[in-house]
Image 1 (cartoon, rainbow, N blue to C red):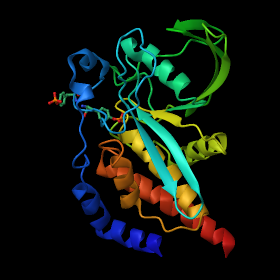
Image 2 (cartoon, rainbow, N blue to C red):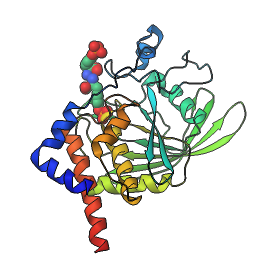
Image 3 (cartoon, rainbow, N blue to C red):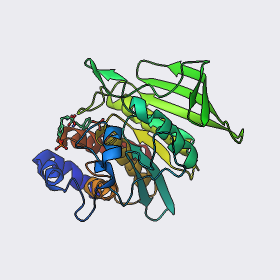
Image 4 (cartoon, rainbow, N blue to C red):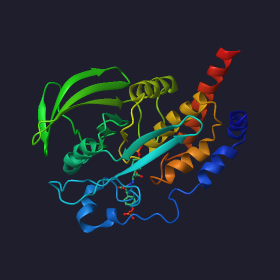
Length: 284
Ligand code: PTR
Ligand code: PTR
């Protein structure tokens, strides 16, 4: 029933008006760490900062000094199922934050990184290539990383990395899933491709308790769309009502500005309806 109302409020424009009215930053949250002198150069965009209360704090003193990275924990509860989908929403690494990024991956025990941007869009750099080329090994601080697999389609790139901690020799394996057909401030070129990608992410995440790291360029627009979609899919499966606006609010309580434009919000609402309607027509 919640989704029938969604169709109506999309048709009337009310859904988008509500989205536009929702706060982009949660009142009372602060962003002081991002503004510290030593951290300013670690932000890709001056206007995109993590909340202090939910930011990921690097544990080991790192090469660049301090504990700061532009990333927030975003936990999405699926009521009635006992599931909490755990994410870290982050900006795309800069040349000087690649080591910090891998340190975060390691310390948070993440085994999946989802990337929703290309390195360059319309001639502008959106994300530094923070990983080694196929069969190559690179050092990032205390981590040695080797790319052991790479597969590309016209919309996706899937990679596998081996990480070795040089001090302890501990080894781990990490998957990298990149969506390459999605320009920033915009929506994916093909909703079917997008849904296929989200399903692949979900399959890879099944049973995973450690956070999945999701990033785009700023770590707000496209990252927010992906988290919203996966959350809605889980709610539909758990037979729970889906209120996209409350998903967005729950996300923005943990990282500011998630889902950047009304077009992105509309796109994800329509994709949610598509999944819901397909599921229901199968059951008829
Ligand atoms: N979007 C551009 C950028 O982030 O690099 C331009 C921009 C810069 C937009 C700064 C807003 C900015 O706001 P402030 O410096 O007040 O945070
Ligand atoms: N100041 C930048 C701008 O408004 O252009 C910040 C920004 C950049 C915001 C990219 C969102 C962006 O998209 P995404 O979060 O999907 O990478």
